[in-house]
Image (cartoon, rainbow, N blue to C red; front, side, top):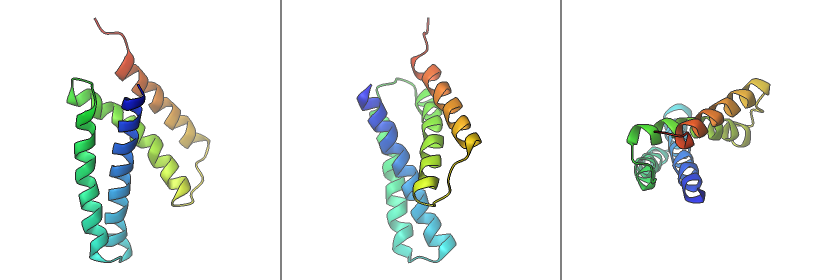
Length: 108
């Protein structure tokens, strides 16, 4: 369970961080090396989820989507200094509940 959580967090940070660096390069005029490093980090994002123990690609990536939403809210709060409101938190909690059902729900 700890490894699952750690891999989801690492993958989320790689996707958001890499995407953010590309954003800074293309949208805010930062040097091209931001885009190059961001792109390399995005490649890591593609690799990290392969270490999950879940057997199906679709389930891992669908569950990751919920984790990504939560991390995105936290990234916006911490990096962009945009305080999440009630609906941001409520939506994030709903996504977390959905992820839990998808990953750990009983299957026959």
